[in-house]
Image (cartoon, rainbow, N blue to C red; front, side):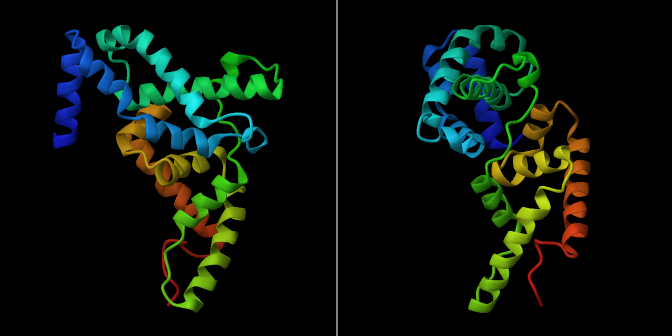
Length: 209
């Protein structure tokens, strides 16, 4: 077990025995990570009306209320559980502000469309960095091509790349979020990158010769 995993388990054990300080630490330590997730997913039409921190704050209030049940049952690793609650809050915020009337239970299972700015950031993270001015120009061109190619990927492939390269989740966290095994996550990620490479005619993570 990695040291950070051992620390997390100790914190969870203390929290499950009623340690209020441990419970508060659990709820507070992932706030920035959750905020970045919300910011990356937030519909840009709502950027002036919704602060990602407000979504996270409401999700953490939900988590505080539900924490005793979570600590008894531990249905998911802690961060994926917090992320799921935050995700539900984000969906509700966007439904409320965009006056959407779709089924909440159905929407909770679906990802909002990735905003263009976030897709561009993801494309940039998928492209190998260049150092010379000529490489920089090539990198910018490739980033734009990657952004276009991402729209052509099947949603499960695109989502696994978002989770890995934009949200920077670990394999175990991705498995918990997607409700599948770590082996399946690795396979899906490999296939997603292969499909992206075929669309581009090259692996975007490789530098030009």
